[in-house]
Image (cartoon, rainbow, N blue to C red; front, side, top):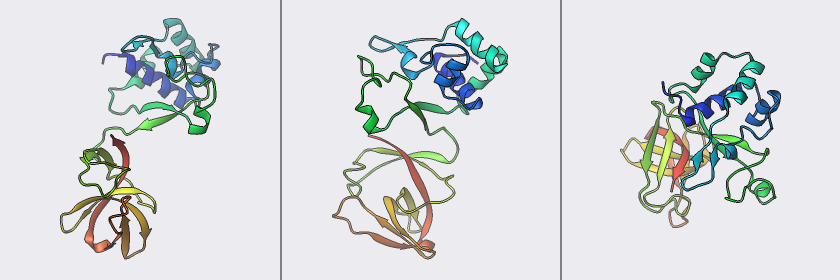
Length: 211
């Protein structure tokens, strides 16, 4: 396995999660600057941004603090299939405050959480939106990622449903009973559809949309 820039940082994040810490907390425990492992420190200026690697010294301090061997650390990087990919997460209200973005508009500081992107697995697939029933939320040509491995669909979920007739629709679940599901559109030109449970082959929650 090649320990690429992305996989190395994935291993740092995985180690932090294993220790019950944020990347900043892991850095502090190792006696490093709290921002050492922040997402904003992983790329330098330039177009495209230049990858930045953690120093060997900082990694050795982290491994010593967590009592982890270099080989075990490399195993945390995995082969890319089991390691979650995450991006910085911040609420919109806080994003308006100072200290969360650098001069280039990239995430910085110690107040960021992480949100995981969907990982590849057999139950995950992508579909392309057609029509305008979910506009302006989903537009013609948008691609949505759905997961068949979601145990329970709830009221308010955006889903893709395949009906026994063969029709596949992207809708919002606005009502659920033991016998029927109300599938609603965002576009008010399309009325809600009351569909009997027996007429639904499957429903999969929409996890992500690429616009």
